[in-house]
Image (cartoon, rainbow, N blue to C red; front, side, top):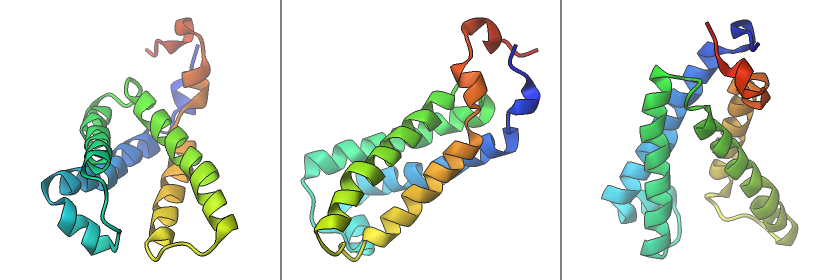
Length: 140
């Protein structure tokens, strides 16, 4: 049976809050004022459909993370998905960009943010709980 002592409750709640503040607010800002948000960060102009998908995804992460504050273990898949997609971006988008030349001016900001989420998620996600069988998922 999964033990509650192996779960870092404070880290879980912190990562949900960080996701609300980072992804959620960025998503809402990109939905409400995409041009102003992009120019504030020095991004090039984006395809509005792709930008809308990204903005909606980020806002969705933020909204679901609000529920994660209330029931941290039930919403761990949100943090897992966040860990996976940001790790994939670092490995398969960033590394090839670094190999081919200098990064755009806004690149280091994204790197720092994504690395902070990956590290935080690695600390917060209770992998024993996530990877345990269904019989071990019930905590008293």
